Length: 361
Image (cartoon, rainbow, N blue to C red; front, side, top):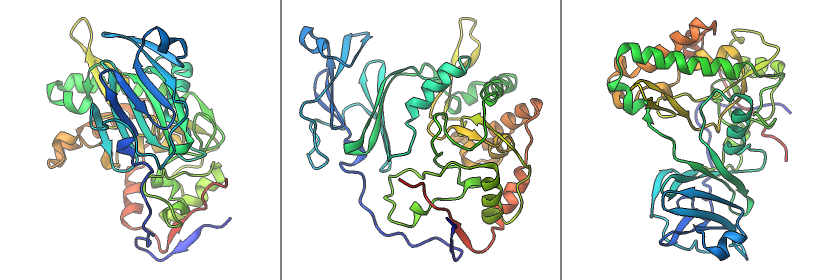
C-alpha cells in the first residue's frame, strides 16, 4: 500500500475520546492494603482465603501480597471503584500512569492496542537474552483488552535517576557511567534481526525520526493510542527515509540490532555499591525497544531532545553533557554517528508530508 501524501504542515485531527475509563482511573484503592486493578483484577494483602486462588504472590516488608481475578470483571462503562489518587506516583496525559500498591511494588499502566508488544514482554526478553543488563524485576503482567491497556507489577528500582544524580558525579564518574551504559548497548546489539520489529516480532512504536508516522495519526487515531508501525525490511526503511527525509539513508544495512531506544537521563537509575562507587542499578522504560539500524543508536543520542538533562533544560551547554558523554562512549565501540545528517533533514524537510499505512488487523 502506498504512503499517504499530504501538504506540509500539521494534519487536521478529528477530536477523539480519551481512554475509557481514563488512564488515571486504571487503579483504585479500596481501603488499607486493597486495590482494584483494571477491569479484571484485585490485589490485597494475603489471608488464608485470598492466597489460595492467587495468580501470583510476593513478599514485602509488611507481609504477603496476592493478585487474583475479579469475578465478574468490570465493563469499560463501569465507574472504576476505589480512590485512584492514593499512591499514584506518575501520570502522563491519556496514555500512562503508575501506582505504588505495596511498599516495594509498582503497577505500571499503559495504553494498549492489538499488535503492540507490552513493555513487560520486552523486559522479560532482555532479562533472558541479555542477563548482564540491569532491568526491573517483573512480578506479573497482563493485557486488559476490555480497558485497552497493559498492566505490569514490578519491584521498585533501587537508586535515583541519572538526571537526579548528575550534579553529584565527578567528570570521571560521568564518563564511567556513560561507558557502562555503552557496554549494555553493545551487549544488546549482539542480537540481530532481518527486519525492524520488537523483541517478540511485532511492529515498533514511535521512532518517527526514521520510520515516519502511521496513518493512525490522521485517520481516527485516539490520542492515547501508541503510534504502531508495520514490520519494516531494509528496503522499506530506505524508501521511508528517502520520502520523509528527502535524502538517502546514511548507510545501507541488511540487518538490524537490538536497542533500548530511549536511553535518556530519566530512564537510567544509579546506585552506590558497598565501596561507595556509582553504578547503573537499572534501565527502565523498554516500551520503544526493538531491532533498529546500528547507525541510528549513536545518531539519535546526539540529536533527540529527550537526551537532554532535565535539570539543565534552560542551560543548553550543560543540558547536552549526557548526550555528549554517551555518544563519545559509543564511538569507542565503533558505533557510527550521522547526527548532522539527521539535523539537516529535520530542519529542511521535503515537501509534501508523508504518512505510512498502519498495520492491518
